[in-house]
Length: 398
Ligand SMILES: *Cc1c(COP(=O)(O)O)cnc(C)c1O
Image (cartoon, rainbow, N blue to C red):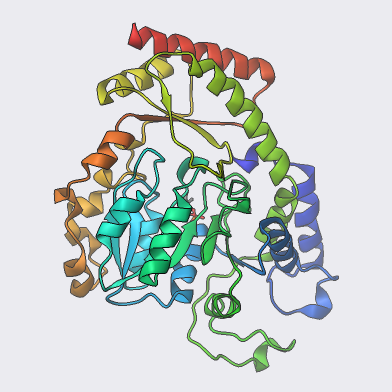
């Protein structure tokens, strides 16, 4: 998945444009910048690729989620529904605007279960945040119907799924707001960076103002701009945007490579008894950044993950035991006092998730194995890998 694997001359050329002009900031300094507006160009490129009216770059994917929640006017006392299987950034972003994250079970898609979402809705719920983990999505049509019925907004966390689609729409563009991460290990990278996309003009205005101290961005004298709203600094730099500009041009070729490698590995595993693949909802196309499969039991999954490693198959994850991606291992959830920077109001509002019953999530995540698809593998390496994976799994099943 990581764009850094194919990092090279194009990225350097873009960065050098910025270094030569010396203007590292995305706003202002019009006279000095030799016509280079890397952040603006990358936003245009994202708008075109994602078929949306507006894209706005931010300093990270976590910043994008935080700004998206601000656009949705989520704040103190509100609840945001997120999945038990996610990256801890979802949880952080909700807390950072003073709202309460409400964890909800995942299903065989490894993403939000619409039935569980419906049950978790209260009068305080404002947003449903599906997280397209490991390159694939939830039943978004079902989630959208629930959002419409209850007057909720959908914020898509597409940080791990750029390039995938649902009902022909790029992931991130299906909900009201979509977020991407361009950190160093994502499908395309800026080093650090993120983006928010939307078709809603008002959300876009809030996004660019809120992420730059409330500046209205009208005219070309930054010092004379008005500040219609409160804001913070979640800006991306021109240097980071320059890297992303080289990478976005290569997104579709990255996805093609991932698909090719993924398909070879999947067909190899397809014939093995006991191996079942993650469900990709009808009308969904994943971005092939991971190959996800289930073993019949948690014990077999644990045995397979050891056998894979013994057979030299790297980059396979057992998320169930991972400290960042599954709620069970989040130490700050085990000890709510570790959330000390937060007010008692927020801490008291949080459910003690260590006592919640997420047996449905455990059922799927506990049996899941997730193998990263790399861009740099040769065909020979992928075939060898397929053989090693088959051997590893057979050694456990027989
Ligand atoms: C990486 C990631 C984020 C956060 O992005 P950063 O740019 O690292 O802040 C959020 N959600 C998911 C699902 C991610 O994988």
